[in-house]
Image (cartoon, rainbow, N blue to C red):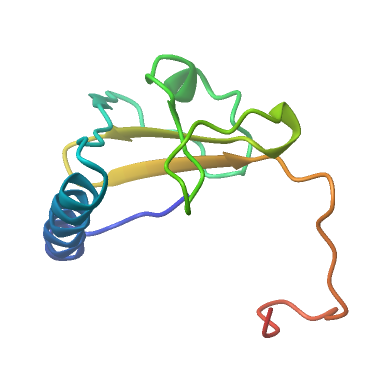
Length: 110
């Protein structure tokens, strides 16, 4: 989950809009995510069970090469969004049965 100040949020919203435009022209269909107002911000702990996330409408990411829905439930990624008066919050819940790495230190190159 990411915390953004107003300037960073505007820059990322602009980038997201451009990316949406690219997806729209590439695949012929617009992608959208709804962000609900959160009177109390979510706890930033990596747990997708916060009540703020449960009230947010999920978006399921598609295959990045074909833009088709992911059919294997072991490989799904769910995105949820909310905002308060200062920040935009995004939650990504990614399922992958085969995550591994030879690297052992935080922020090692992956």
